[in-house]
Amino acid sequence: MLAGNCLRRARRHVPRGRGQYVFMREAYGGFTAFLYGWVLFTAGNSAALASMAIAVALFLGQAVPALGAEHVLATGSLFGWHLQLDQGSVVASPPWSCSPSSTC
Picture 1: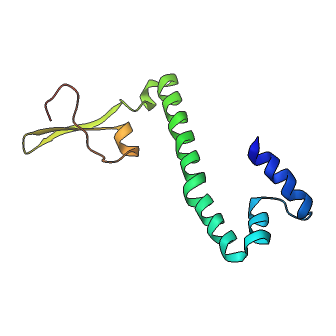
Picture 2: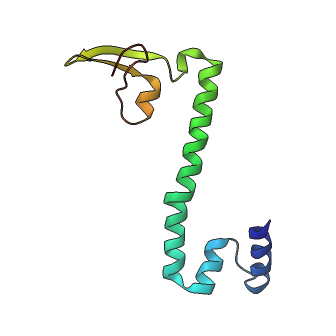
Picture 3: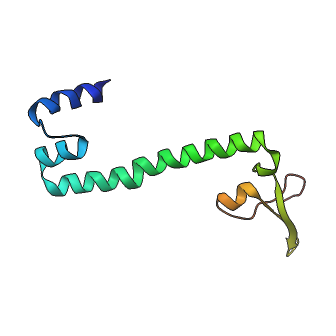
């Protein structure tokens, strides 16, 4: 609500402005607006998209169990360690995880 009110007030002073980038450019200059745009793109939007992707993946895992994060793709052992590659690990980092039934 507060951000909407601020943009509404800024809209009165910059009639051709259509977003926060334009208001930043008019108020603080081009370089500040450039930095704002890149920070918004890399940090703000990336985090929102990642959380949406996780939510969709969790939902699909419940709706279609073969798409779930717990679905095991491969197992094996390396130097006495039991390794398991599941679909959740393919998306997340690190790609190899220990299974709950083994000691890691």
